[in-house]
Image 1 (cartoon, rainbow, N blue to C red):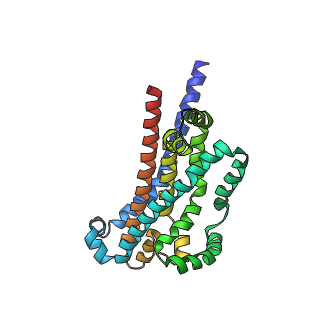
Image 2: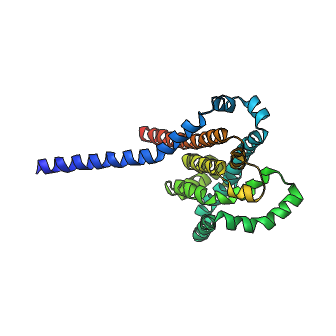
Image 3: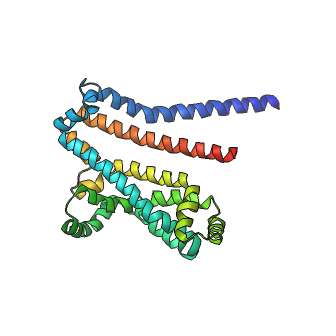
Length: 266
């Protein structure tokens, strides 16, 4: 019996490693191909890390990078300002409409980006009229686009704690609702908030369809235009964006693990 269990465990280990190797090759091989292609021109990576020369040589790319970073930061900020107080308030005071809020937040996930743009185009005609045609106006569309992912992260964080007990305890000690949200609930869902913010940044950095169809500038639009003049630089920038998203998700994982370790130690 022990021998059968040992053979079964050995087969499971072999199968597990085989699956990991196949998935590793599937995901890493394209990245290796991107590295090999982008290094065919010896000036690509030195130019990419030299911002003054990059701005002079590829001004559209530099503008796209700056625009995407600004869009990502503003989108994450606006999403948190809009969603965190709403999710907390619904949990505390309006639990009956929680399903409705969840449905509305998840709705953008079911609508293709091309259809979303068709609906946003008339709205953006008025946005351009009042605010101009700046690429930062994409923040409004991106805030809608990130709602499904951000809501899931924040809702999971709220579900992991007893929000009502914390709020009632804070209120009994004389704290107002702003104090309850900012100083009591928010510190307990810090990991969920960081998760929502990082997911929003990663999504904005990789978004192309809405920016392209609305004739706005961002990183992916600049990469698409750059590919027509310098394929190696285009692939190098794409690889850098992928690595940046990976680093953000890795930081999120490390922050979550560290927070869990602190809780267990306490």
